[in-house]
Amino acid sequence: MRKLTPSEKKILDRLLYPEPFEVIQEETQLAYGEIRDDLINLMNSRLIEAVDPDDPNASTTNYFDSDNVRDSVYRITNSGINLMKRRS
Image (cartoon, rainbow, N blue to C red):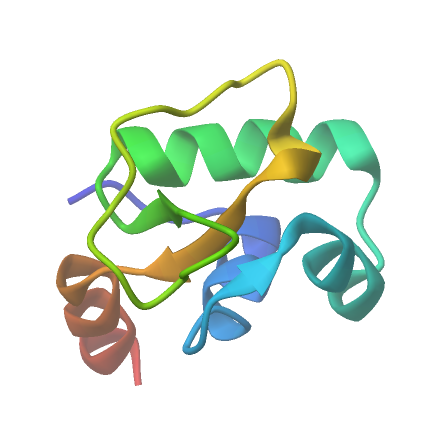
């Protein structure tokens, strides 16, 4: 498993519940580009997933538009939770 950056850790810490991009940005105080890059990296590592904004508790969406990251809701995956537990 790769080492997380400090900004990726900040984002993971806030995704215990599904959160929209705006909430992540507000709570982490990170710049748009940094959040966008971190979200994509975390998704590629299968530590978070994009979910349907209308039903964030449903199964994952098959569609994610990396050009419009503001339109998605994100939540941590089981792999992400396990990584956070090991980090503690």
